[in-house]
Length: 282
Image (cartoon, rainbow, N blue to C red; front, side, top):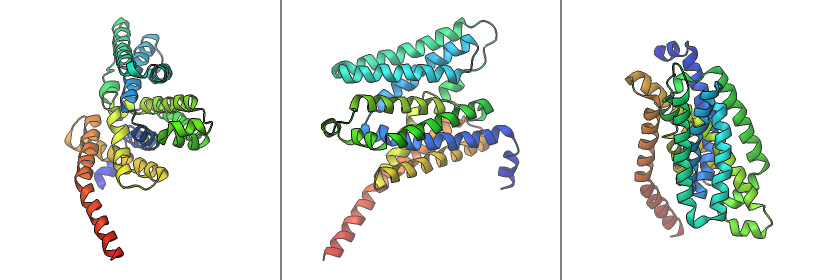
């Protein structure tokens, strides 16, 4: 406890905890839609393409997160349009956009003259380097995500489970789908400094996947996904500090371990519930 109090005296640690809370809220909500809709691949494409924006922003001397936001929006709309119109070739085109975005980012970093700060944190994560400015950006993105999900909750729910029925009910499926991809783009931008673009999809999906195994209803999944995401991030943060390990990788190891355990014990809970139902019916 004393060690924890001592750590919280440092601004970088307080910023890291605030970032964990903000990222946990966004990933807990949006990750549920990614898991239900089964669009992990396109989410990964958006995340990696965003590195092009980081490179361009660094070249222009502006905050890399701003560039990542702009590029993630272009990626979301582009990949969304490709998937809706050319489904049979979508994986190939999305993979190409993924690689091109990464390449653009690397080239613009190379073209930037003078001393280059360590941009590897955007690839592998460095939650301890989150600045006050980045926290404000994360807060703004969170508020925007909450606003859009609140406004279009029923429509997002509808297209996540049955697009055909949604179309029959006059839901603007294509527009709502693009809104969902935009929300994913905002979320991965926030997560990139916590676990990095390489591992962002793991933290986006594993808490939601665990919640989906036990929660009843979408809202309950979001609550549990948010709680789990925050717990994984905070536990991984302190473990990495104690063991002197990379924070992003440690966070993912914690999340992955819990996910594997949940897969192992899920059949036991299913058998237990079946026995209970059988005994009650008898």
